[in-house]
Amino acid sequence: MSPPPPPPTLASQPAEWRDFFALTKPRVMTLVIFTGLCGLLAAPGHLHPVLGFTAILCIAVAAGGAAALNMWWEADLDAGMKRTRHRPVPAGRMDPVSARDFGVALSCGAVITMALAIGWLDAGILALSIFYYAWIYTVWLKPRTPQNIVIGGGAGAFPPLIGWIAVTGHITLMPVLLFLIIFMWTPPHFWALALFVQIDYSNVGIPMMPVVAGERSTRHQILAYSVVLLPLTLLPWWLGYTGRIYGVSALALGLCFLVLAAHVGLRRPLPDGDAMKPEKRLFKYSILYLFVLFGMLVVDHLATGVGA
Amino acid sequence: MSQPMTPSELAAFRARQKSRSRALALVLVALVVLFFVITLVKIKDGAAARHQAVAPVATQPASGAH
Image (cartoon, rainbow over all chains, first blue to last red; front, side, top):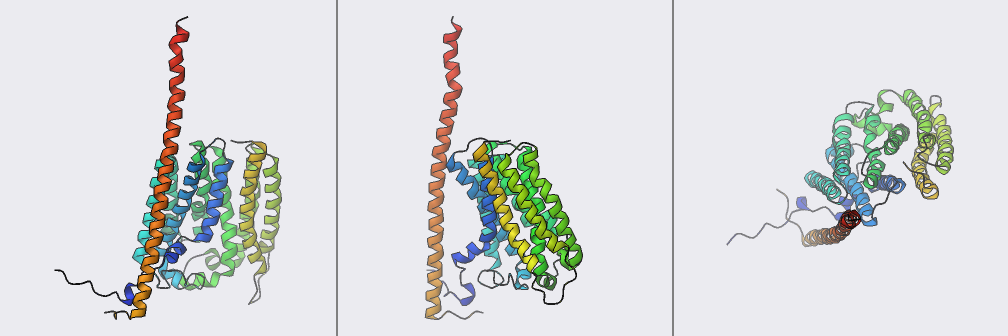
């Protein structure tokens, strides 16, 4: 007869399901689900609602898996930053191996389900998006270059592309434009945040743009990307892929974005202890901007029936 | 080596284990249901596609006889 198992110790306390859920970065996932859903709803053609739901579920689960892998890899860095030190791994509520295994399981599960339910092209792009975020951005770019968020922004730009392809089954110019819109939106969105949390990043040695190139250069680049973003969001309208509802909305939303970005981009050197109100305003607006822009894309498609 | 747990810590340990097991069971049941429904949809779509592909072939000899 084998000896009884040793009693559990404090060190072997299992993580709660809430901690696993926190690993998936649920707040970021909201935007991922929404843009993926908009890509799916705005695409020409028909997809059975069950398969549509499955496609969005796979996008969400894959994003959660990539986020868990990111938190596993960056646990040491997260422990040094005020904003992230309460995450499950750095806070000691979960062992790193569980976080890694959870991330791998979610990622593989999402890709396999996407392949079986929707198609191999979508599954391949989904796998690429996970690799892009977990490896290219997290492991390779983030600790090495201040351009990390520019190139890494591609990781968050995949959902509408995947949603669109789930319906059409092939890649056309319109879903690529949707990808590019999020790609161009990411730097001003993220650098606005980096401007008011830059002390955190400098503490852990992450070469974020404000830390490496300075505030002034970051502000100018925020404005430059915002200037490029406006015509890019209007391209689908000019090329005839969308109707007037989207076009006018994109123009109005983009002009507001530009005004807020100009407030941030053209600010003079700040006194110590500045509340960074324009930066916080731009960061909040940029989230609302993307929600409304993609929402109007769907409204336009449903109202006019214009598609790629 | 870590200290053995006190009874209250052990109770907390068991409660966490139970909560995780329940969450996992829920996810597994949801996956079973999802895969079942996906299979039904795929079979239905496949049957409809086959029907569409076969229908013109079935009518061809009749029209070709004239």
